[in-house]
Image (cartoon, rainbow, N blue to C red; front, side, top):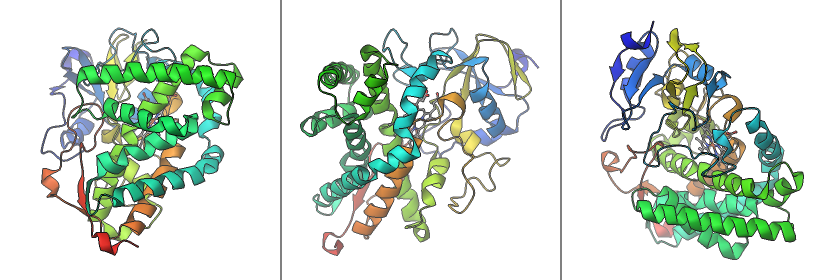
Length: 398
Ligand code: HEM
C-alpha cells in the first residue's frame, strides 16, 4: 500500500459538542493501514490509532521526536515542540543518544521512591488548595481555583523555588496554559519572565545549593546551567495543564460514578479513560518504515492518537466504560518508549491525594452546570476543561 491509496480524513477531529475520544477514531482503527490527514498548515500527516501501532511508532528508532526534522507535524496554537535553538534542554524533542543524558540525570528525581519521599509535601499542598477552595464559600471554578494550582505548587516546591516566589511562578504558568483567557503576547511575555526567573534561580542554586531537584541535577554535571533552564521549563509546562485537565475531568467522571469515590484504583483508569494528552506525541519517520501494514516514507509526519489507542477494543474490553477494576496498566496515556512520561509517578501521587482529600473534605461537591454546557477543550493538543463551575454546601464541610 502507498500514500496515494489512503483515505483522507478531516483534522482536527475533535469538535464542539462531540464526546471524547471522537467517534471517528473507531472508524480509523477499523480501516486497514493508516489514515491520512492535512493539518492547518497544509502539511499531510499519518494518523495512527490502533494500540499496537501507536506502541510501534513510539518505540521504533527509525521514527524521530525531533521537531527540526522536515515533515514534523505542527499542531496547536503554539505550532508544536520548541527546537534546541529556541529552548536548549527541551529534551522531549531529542532522540537517543542525545536524549539519554537528560533522561538518566532526571529519572532518579521521579522514581517511585523519590516521589514517596515527596508525599507529605504533596498532601500538604493538596490540603492547602482544598482549604483555599473552601474559602470561596460554596461556589468556585474548580480549574482556576484548584486544579491548576496543585501541580504548579508541587513542582515549584520540588524544584526548590523559594516559598515567596511561588505565587509568581503559579501566576505565570497559569497564563501559559490558560489558553482561553490569555493572549499570545501575554503567553510569550510569561515565557520570557519565567525563563529569566529560572536562569536567576539556577545561578542562586549554583552558589547556595539546596535540597532540591535543580541543585541535585546541576551536581551531576550532566546538564549545563543553560540546558537546565529548558529542563525546568519543560517540567513546569509538561506537568501543569495535563495534570489539571486530568483532575477536573476526573471530578466530573467520579461525580457521575459515585460508587468509585474512595477507591484508589480510579487513578490509573481515569488517566486511561480521559487520555488528555491525545495529540502531544508528534513524530517523523527518518527512514522508510512499515507501520500497521503501511509504508511510511522517510520525511513523513505521524501523529499517534493516544486516546484512540487507549480506547481500542483489541487492547481493552469495553474501553468506553469507566471500569477502575480493569487491568489498565498497558495504557499509553503517558506515552511509551524512551519518551514515556517522566512525571507519571508524581501524577499518580497527586491524583490519589486530590481525589481522596477533595471528596472527604467537600462531600457535597456538585457540578454547577448541565454537563453539555461545560466548556470542554476542543482546540489545542490536550483535552480537558477550560473551566468547571462547582458548588457545595459550606455548612456541610467538617
Ligand atoms: C512526556 C502525558 C504529567 C513531565 C509525556 C508524554 C505523554 C505525557 C503522553 C510523551 C510525549 C512524547 O512521547 O512525545 C502526561 C499526562 C500527564 C503528565 C497525561 C498528567 C496526567 C506530567 C508531569 C510531569 C511530566 C506532572 C513532570 C512534572 C514529562 C516530561 C516528558 C513527558 C519531562 C518528556 C519525557 C522525555 O522526553 O523523556 N507526558 N504527562 N508529565 N512528561 Fe508527562
